Length: 102
Figure 1 (cartoon, rainbow, N blue to C red):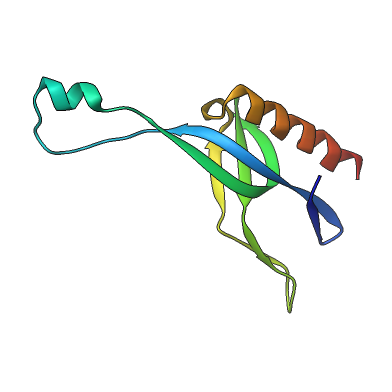
Figure 2 (cartoon, one colour):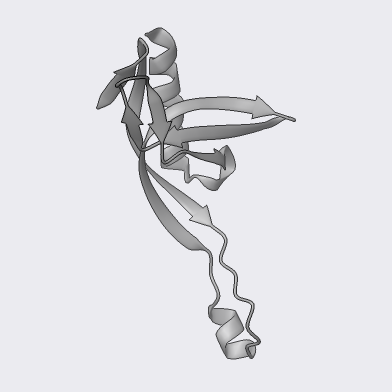
């Protein structure tokens, strides 16, 4: 599994599939309204961590980073774990376990 090490911590690269909301503010009839669907998004990023807050699990990722002069993370996102499809949730949990081993 592809990874990068920053500050002696290994972060694993993942290709994640998740569902995003879709919204439109224009007035439409039934035909167009019935066409409105959530978007399936593919994100390629490094897993930063998984954390729990108020009984819900969240996933933080980053897609760019700098090592010099000071380490930093860019293109950062946080997602509720449940927006990811089952395969992505499994990959996130596997990467998290691997991170904890290093």
